[in-house]
Length: 107
Image 1 (cartoon, rainbow, N blue to C red):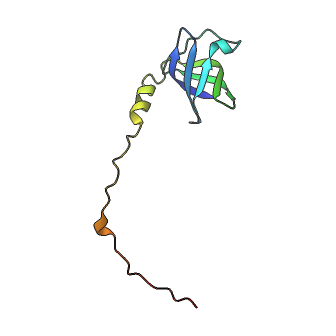
Image 2 (cartoon, helix red, strand yellow):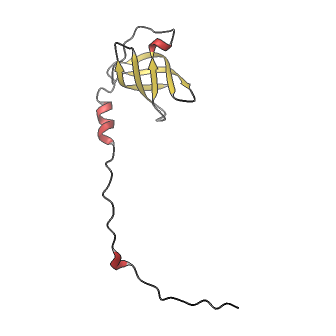
Image 3 (cartoon, rainbow, N blue to C red):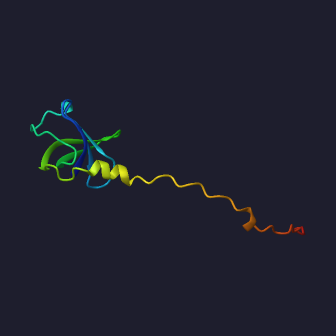
């Protein structure tokens, strides 16, 4: 799977990755995995990784750096793309027509 790093912590060697399938985010924690190639992951880096679809969350394993700084502003652009809630529609009671009551004939 390919993805772009949205956030990373160099000290704890953790990262959050936006996956190419636009599904849930993948989480990477180097401390949980035995293989770490030493590459530091920074926000905006394009990475290739093995995806483990767990029952609780998706985990990225063995990430390999494909392109450093591929999309450096991706996190900010995604944050800006969030739509703001729209104003609630105002009720217009003048457009509602009342129907006359009908009596139903029972046979």
